[in-house]
Image 1 (cartoon, rainbow, N blue to C red):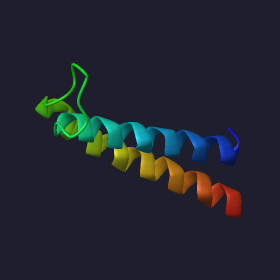
Image 2 (cartoon, one colour):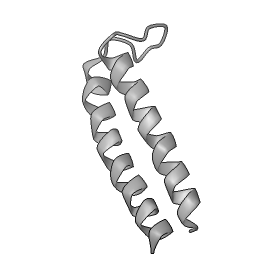
Image 3 (cartoon, helix red, strand yellow):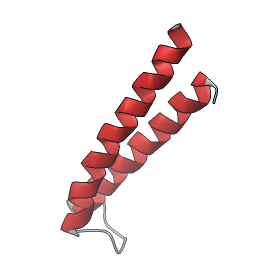
Length: 63
């Protein structure tokens, strides 16, 4: 995969993880996920994975 695509996927995944976290914490409402503790736990895990993917993408851009 091209490095730019990897970075884009990582950033989109990070944004999704942040949204899930905010929904799980009840900060963002209007969803069945709002206020559900599971998403408050899964969201940060997704963000960590996304940051690793983004880091890998940036390393490939440099190399």
